[in-house]
Amino acid sequence: MSTRVDNDFDSSSIRDREGRNLRPFSRPDVSKALKALQEATDLWEYGSPYWQVPSEADLLELCEQKFKPGSSSRIDLGIFLPHNDPVGQCSIHAIDWRNRTGQLGVAVWKNSDRGKGLGSNAIRHLMQFSFDDLDMFRLEAFILQDNKKSLHLFKGLGFQQEGILRERYLRRGKRVDVVVLASIRDK
Image (cartoon, one colour):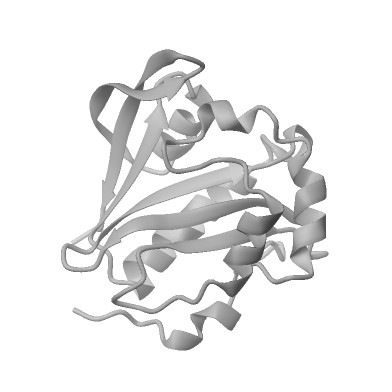
C-alpha cells in the first residue's frame, strides 16, 4: 500500500463546491486566526487530550510544518471561508502508517461560525482524503463524553462508538470519560 500524495501536499488545498477549503496555515493567516481564537475560550474544555487553543507560537509552528507521506505523524489544516478567513482547524493525527490508522479532530473557533456545517464539512473532506489519498484503513475520534455536538457530528458521518475510556481526561480537577469512535474504509 502506498499513499497517493506527494511531498508537495503543503502547497495544496482541499476545496468544496462553496469555495471553503482546508489547507495548511501560512504566515499571513496567523493574525486573522489569533483574532478569531479570542472567541474560542470555551473550546479548551472540550478539546480531546491532544487539542488546546493554539498560541501565536503554535500557529507559526504550523506554518513551518511539512508533511512527509509515510513518516509524518500528523497533518494540521486550517478551515478557510471563500474569502480566505480562517474559521477553525482540523487534523489527522496519531497517524500509524504501518497499520494505516489515524485520528481526526476539528475545532470551529467562533460561536457565530458553529452550527453551519463547517466542522462536518471539514471532517467529511478529511475522511475522503485520508481513505482515498493517504490509503488509511481506519479513522478514529476521541471525544469527551459530554461534548454532545462533536459526538453528533462524528456519528452523523458514519463513525461507530467502540467504547469508553473511563476517567481518561482531567478537566478542572475532575475526571471525564472519553468516547472512542471509529470509521473503517469501505472494502
